[in-house]
Image (cartoon, rainbow, N blue to C red; front, side, top):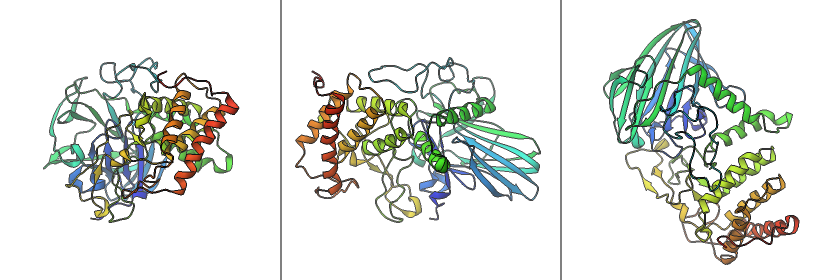
Length: 464
């Protein structure tokens, strides 16, 4: 199987879910409404029949491609023999004017961006909708927009029931439903061709056409359309506003800013969990078997990400992640895992998807990750270093954060002579790895530093 090089993909994110878009306008990976949801576009790991959404200009070529400055909003300029067009793609942040009761987030803007530790509810319907917007504007001449859409739920296994119906506002919309998943596509109509849908639309200079794909729980009413221009402005403002709080040295500003935006794109907006990657089963070696699901929150990876954010002045991200960590580990640090789900769930069973041929024929395709049950000696050290960096950045310890660190020290002490699977998650016999040994030392070093410099020794035990 011929696969599009992964470096030719762009990442879209609304800080809850993500999509990958090829240079030629094919969305071949999309999980909604969460990063770790079952994919509904999965041709990245298979064929077109496993789900994708292509949008391109007929007889055209891509002449430029960029993110709008300071954002994760993608702009692609196409040129054809008859005209030029700009395609703008984004996953909106915020409700974009969708009325309350149709899945919009708190319209007053009072909902927190993450649950503080110990909170039990959120304002608004958090994951009742998720949107993906594709807008085409003809810049000059005339262009012919060509699309193909194949919705396949559950990693390409399930063909949905598709029909045209009415949304909450009374507008006609394409609706796809299977099990608990619903998809609504707003925009100029696509027509059925076998088990796919296709569309052809001509635009003249200054004309714009937009399509909005919305996930919603299938048992709820079909949501109305968002205001595309409004969600574009809101989303640009969200990204640029966040990046504006970051300190970046002038000579490295562009690559560093882009890297920080990617870290933010992989951080769940409400829980604070930071996933390692947006995908599963991209091979470490083409044709190899080390094809893992990375849509989870590794304590090590998140700790390193937070050190980068803290180095550029972003203490808020550290605070929300610390709350996520406290919820994930909760009152049972003796059962510490190296990774958790976005919400802090422990159960991440690994299974293989035999129906998918894999990226560049690399099998097996896996979802879930059995490494969650491994002992990796370095993890606590990485976490302790990150928590120490938070203190140095001025983030005060909470009622629970220092007792948790004391528990992590006891956890490491109890396993100081235990071999482990190492940073690369070896699935053979455990061994002693140099990196792990150094990080064990770092655990105790950061604890001693906290006691000596910050006077944190006299705190009761967790649960005491």
